[in-house]
Image (cartoon, rainbow, N blue to C red; front, side):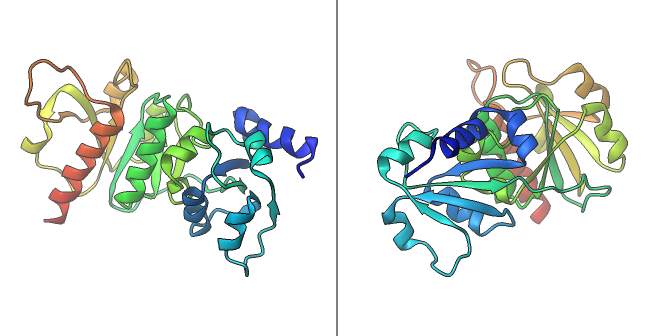
Length: 249
């Protein structure tokens, strides 16, 4: 049975970004997300699960598992339909890299939608991009909705909040490209071996600060006249896919 103290603690981790940062912990849910985190470097401290999930769990694990009823799981879940398991995990402490391996990276300029953030984290995992950068006003990557949308990829991709004007100062040898409907079609550009793509806010696009450090504006070719833009996560997926395919040939 869950105690009132446990319920209050879990709820506060789910709802307060400040509390998550102070405690250096976050909450994750569902078997798929937990399974992914268990295979990452994230340290899971405690698991709350139904008997059904526990029976399928690795019994040699040293992680404490508290069996709870579906009713109790619903009391601590942030999901509309709770799904078998919830975990409390440590937020990894990784210093900002002084140098980056040659690769393509993403910088998110005021991206505030949890679904978009989580999807982009998963994209970085898919394309083997271990670091993701963004402005300090981006949505908290350990927000439960972000963790869920990432499907556990948050355990494999480290997000670094960095003021945009510091980006080029920190990594001066990387070319910076801003996504924009006014940009040059990406398929017409000769792309370097490494670079940083800036993806803008869902409503306002690229900020003036981003444009100041941008070497080139790039766009995804459009084949219809009656649409003005793409979702930031979709645009990021198309851009990364094209770049990665071009660089692998």
